[in-house]
Length: 160
Length: 390
Image 1 (cartoon, rainbow over the protein chains, first blue to last red):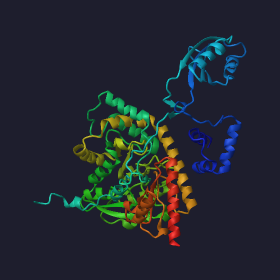
Image 2 (image 1 turned 90 degrees about the vertical axis):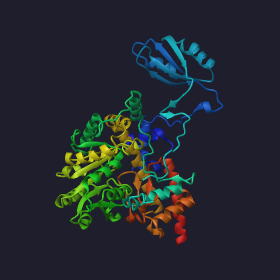
Image 3 (image 1 turned 60 degrees about the vertical axis):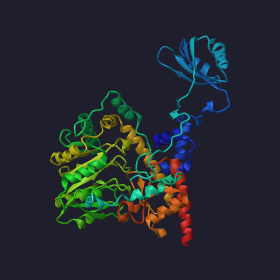
């Protein structure tokens, strides 16, 4: 049940409870309970909206920043990750395997905005030993969704 | 000038669906619930394998019966999914869709005058293929009160000394009916007792929502009497690739292969390479699509209950077959008015046999949003009809 709820709402969190219950072949109360429970357990961490900001008049720049850090005794990477993720302009922080340690995703108003963050805030942290910033030029697909694509039904209207 | 045509073919009626299709295609803004194929694209890894085979220049014929690796994968797949054991070397052939397999099987098995039992409502090609093979079609009317399953009694009633083949079209298009194990066992007993053969069209086998599909070929003593037909169209959303297969005892398959060899040569090579990938790595795709269809099925059934539209609960394929007898119109009148007044296309039940009168076929090979929009129109339509009837 949980898996089916999650798989469904991952793609469509706006479905109403009654409809979700019908689709899953159960009753509304069961779905409501499962959802509440999963929210409590932080299995469900939020209900967000996927937006193509490029189509709006708002200026936004997204950057991926590779960060190499010196882990701290007893804290590992958690402490430094926390110092970084507390900045509201940071949208994601991942601990990564490979030649660098943290992948930081950052949203800013302009290239300058992002650069300032990297040079002033990120690089100056004691544990940070190096950064490499990559600006995103175009988002083709995000969260499993191809951006800007509207699929039309090309099938014949009646087939046996 | 002499008449250039064969009377045999002239007598065959064009598909009832065709007529309706012509009307619908003139209405560009109509919503359709009439499609008999998946709305999903073929999963990318399968398409990619087809593209790759083209890039590698695999543009040759394959052997008549199909690529060896594909037949081996089909053999493994049937073992894994329906517990049937077929020798890929002698008992499996790859065809151009399940529909070619139906034609070839009938032609390989019938002599003039042999009777073929065709349960109806069912897919449109059994009757013409039987006629083309000089067989005599004998219809069995399936009933809603039996959930459109074939019962032992209905079968016995139609058997004569000339009956040779029973066509078993489950999960069923258009009703969505399935045959459970015990239903098949009852039929199998009669088949063995009366010394008949079965052509089991299991093209919708993966779309079964009440536990796994059971193949009649897996029942004791039935493999030697059965031509099992399946394919990639519905399970893997591969309709346009035109790929199916038939499995049968070597003695029957050998003859089927002759027809295929002379008429078709071999199934499309690109499709065969893609199908190998489908069977090797496609189980998860099938599972996901089945889940989505099942969700839509529940959604439709719930909507019918709410609008008080009578419909038996189907557990297979991607069709529902609601009863429209309460409105006092024929299926065709209902479908035509619905199309004209609400611009939604459904298929009249009569397209699948006379006993489909009083029913319409609604396909749920559509996204939930599309279904929602169409159902709102259906609700408005039947409310208006009820109002008129008062």
